[in-house]
Image (cartoon, rainbow, N blue to C red; front, side):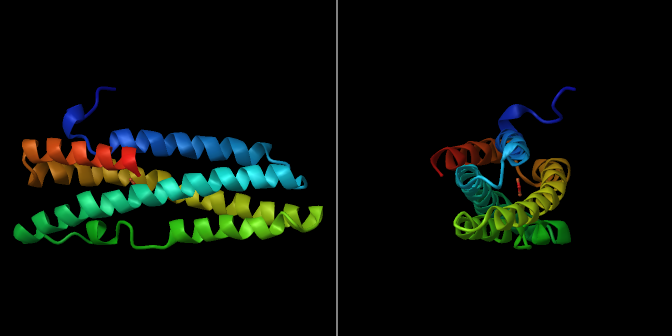
Length: 170
Ligand code: FEO
C-alpha cells in the first residue's frame, strides 16, 4: 500500500518502524528466556532496560517536538482535542521500566521465584504491547492528519528532520 503522506513530512513512520522492531525483539526474547537460569534472566533484563529506555526517549521526543507544538497550533485555531492532551498521560512506560529494574533482585533468588517473576513480566509485556501498538497507530492515523492540517509543508519537513535527529542522538 502506498504511504498516505510524503515521506519527508511523515513524522511518525520512521521512528515507529524502529519501535515495532523493538517490540518484535522483546517478544522473541521473552519466549526463549529460561527464567530458571540466572544468566538468561539477566540478559533479558539488560535488553528490556535498553528497549524501554528507548521507548521513553521516543515518548519524550514526541512530547517535546510534536505534541507540544500541535497543542499550540490547535489552541491558536480554537480547537480542543482530548486525544492530543491525553496521548502520553499514563505511566505505562515508567511502570514497565520499574518492573524490569525490579527484576535484577530476582536474579539472586530461587528458580521457582524467578519463574514467578517471569510470569508476571510476560503478562505485563503482553498488556503493554496490546496498548502500545494501537497507540502508535493512533498517532499515525489521527495525529499525522492533524499535523497535515495545521502545519505548513515546510514546517513539517523541518519538524520531521528534528524528530529523526533527536532519535539518532538519544
Ligand atoms: Fe510514537 Fe507515542 O509513541
